[in-house]
Length: 462
Ligand code: AMP
Image (tube, rainbow, N blue to C red; front, side):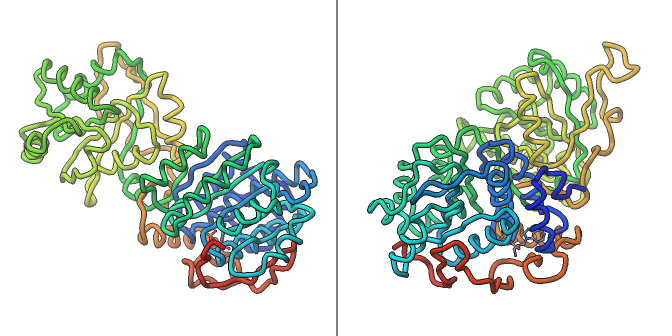
């Protein structure tokens, strides 16, 4: 099992984490920390209660421990933007607790309190500044705070920022950050406007998410075939020669790709239909109806079109092309093995898709068993039959960690998972409970200056 030391965090941080009573990284921590330590941007889908604060704060502190520069006057080395005062105060508390052996300065800049103490706290610069957007922008406007030397910026609870009307201030804040920097973006959900902001802000981000869909994914037998792109067709036809592929869902990345697959399957006398955005509602319903009745044995779909598909008894999911987003893989394979049935998911991965495969394995924290077209002992002509594919995935964690679905259920599943791993370590800050039930830390926030008292009111921004 992963522990904090194996993630590569420096000793003073490990000591602080242990004093907090954390024994095991939560799934979002285990996924996010390695990417951030590598210096990559991260797009995280996770809600409060998953341990996301430590997932971005620990790597920031690691950076400061390795590189002990002083912050510039009025500047901050790391900026964390939070939607509410309460959350800002909690994040700052966490930064102080996790950074206590690194020795970091932390300030909070939020609305609803006087400007002067904040200006004073920032005058010599701080390592970590936690701020709500409106007030921060006020200080940037007057020159009391500069952001041009900031090395890391974290946008926390981005969807909540949208609800509170903070998108414009956030964009203005980002426009002041000319320095080359690392960006971290967390949101519990991904409405369009948030997806767009993430795209503007992040550069080649690693995508991480935590949810309960993984429990479905664990029931699915998975395999990946490493294959040349031009041989995928033949392999698909070969696989479908096996009658146990009774109701098979094939995924492609594009609509055009889906049509092409249907064409060559029909040419091979395999009854197939495509379902995607270019098809009329009637055509989609016919395809889906035929698939349900068993008239259409193979349904070829794109990710978006597959969203509404809920068909019992899908025996196989074939990822003819790997999805660009790892979470889509989990959604795809979750179409089989429904309601306790077992199912099989086979991915075709060509050379250009190896990176996507690695991302999927990182996100789902599973290594997908690889099979070659030529299984050991099989001749060239022999088909891959399902019986020859591995029955269980290697290296799958009981309890899982990846997946992607939002909402309260996710939070519950996370809590359960954490308990089963013995996290929480008894006591104070170690307990993982949904926000609102969590014990509030009592430590004063005066530590690094600017300390504002935690407030339960939403920050009006100013
Ligand atoms: P967050 O989602 O960051 O608000 O964290 C939720 C709660 O989980 C907080 O009370 C943290 O102190 C706690 N927590 C964070 N990481 C861990 C861990 N690895 N083990 C136990 N508790 C944790």
